Length: 433
Image 1 (spheres, rainbow, N blue to C red):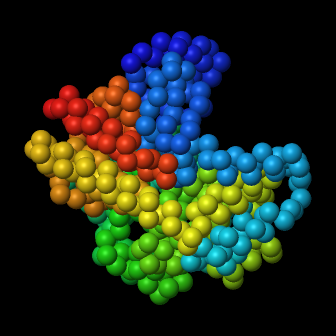
Image 2 (cartoon, rainbow, N blue to C red):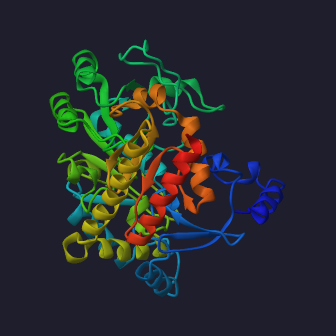
Image 3 (cartoon, rainbow, N blue to C red):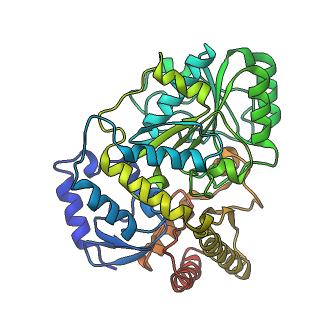
């Protein structure tokens, strides 16, 4: 493949945009940040005319596939009525009622534009409700790029690193050290460590903030009983359980990670898959807590619940809910076929490759481990440089992947595309072996 036009655009973009990109994640692209011009279904096309079977899917939102007609038609119709009212409109109610109908913990809802900002609203609310300030979070979990949450995401660890509470690790220049006092950080999937912490400091903790499944780091499902254990500890101590479902919401099932893993948090954030590729986000939760937004807890935003975002979400959720969520049967089958195909190939080639997660969002890594249980397993035992080489080999064969190892499946992926992908997997594995 040739990427000459992309390279030229990248050189041009560096003259007007810092680093030539608008998100630091895109700096990691190989051979350089590619420029795209269209996408449809499970395919995305760059400015050089190359087409790729896409498992990046906009970093997760395109659960229905790119340019889904129902979503685009709804947005086209809505935007002709206006884009931004700075006031209420009926479609907000439609989307809020859908969230309450589908999400186990949702009794009331608030909308924003990004997962990062709704996480901030959830933390503010938890502190207001409990009168406490400390928040427990976990190594390798991503809760947005803001100063006070971009911590302990990808930090140095080794086999000797204690599993006791660690001082939060700052991830960027410019962060103030005072944010380290707001959080307690533990390894994930270790209920005993959380129990020890609550025994000593449970009275200080406003919320336990967790992903329902670690998607960005290792595709790690919760251990059986782990999320239920967090629920119990929160109930016993008066802390709130806050589940960040920005990635997992509607991707892991019609009822999110909380439905898939059978736990009901107090608060949950959603974004990505809830709007079919448009910018929308929500904080949902129990009414007794959410009502504080109407009293003494501020949550504001000029573009919150704008016409376009609400139309996109209404259409996307309607598609997902059709026939009692029948689309998820196809998603699960497609993802399981791909996971199984990769596992067959690596077994036949005798390579140290692990595929784990759930069919709609699974992780692939070069490791001798039989399972990755937490961030430390991922950081210490996975060969990330080798996976980077693998993703580039896949790109050359017309398959676009995320360098962190997570694969996202869409309802638009076809059996033929899965077969093409598996051929590329085998060829690429041979190339990096």
